[in-house]
Image 1 (cartoon, rainbow, N blue to C red):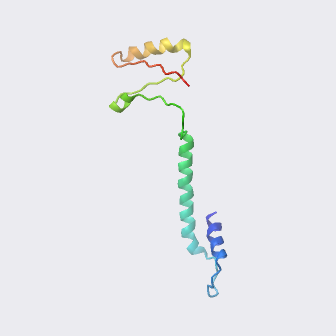
Image 2 (cartoon, helix red, strand yellow):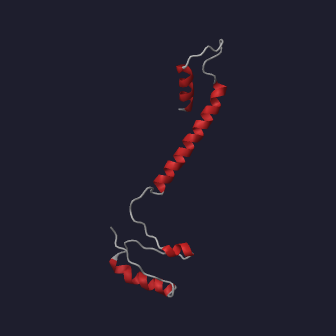
Length: 106
């Protein structure tokens, strides 16, 4: 792709090169390298957005206490028959800091 862009540009603007080839390989290597790096960076950014599911308009589970160094253990949409067992398990681990918050899913 990068070679096609470089050679197409050189062929579209035919200049008198004094008998030398219009499309020379060595000067085009720099352009091919730069366009390859651009393609790699764009592919990385696109794959980041896809794997991170960005942008998302769904509400994410977040607690402001995380900014204070606390740890969030979250279970989104647990089965109704396991909610009591989850609450007991969390309270048994650290009863003074365990906080159970129910968030209704949209």
